[in-house]
Length: 230
Image (cartoon, rainbow, N blue to C red; front, side):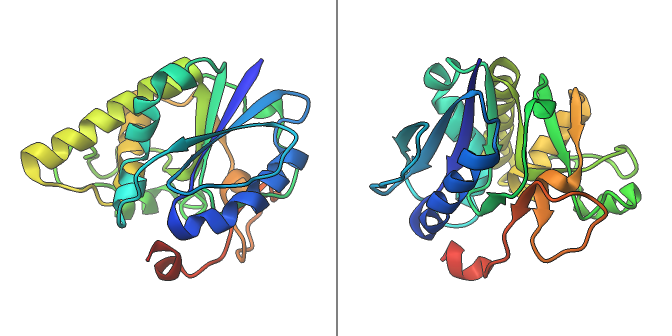
């Protein structure tokens, strides 16, 4: 079984690459045939016993790298479709406990650590403009999913990538709209219409300095967002 772990890291985000790869070597689907797909605009020298494929992408200013991530995946459909499963993780993350075959399913979403305790509060994160293809009316969703870690079979993940990429393009061309939480807003709209076949707990997108009632599996590292984005 072939697994692809997708990481986008341009400019200052490349500082996170070796640490996340080191942690994935230890904890991410050990015993499986894993390839790291690194999308970057820089020449990288990453050490790992696993396969690494570096794919050149153009760096764009915030929020275009996150808004355009699914287009990057859709544009690399041919290469990525060779995998059985694909998982995306933010570069500024770190695996700290074993992540195994419990994550394998068709469509995999991770419950957002900010809203799991009271799903109704996720209304504040929803795209509220009806003309946007990311729009979700208040009180229509049970769970809100984090953009930092998601995946599934290559067929389903790439189908999602193509749909989200197209919807973002339509939003921009027709209405000059960038959704409230960028690609995450569009992913939540997609998951509303195509329910995840597996929901992961916030263990898989656990903010480093928070204290949550979950085991720590994949940390979202503390950092100065403005510093790394610039």
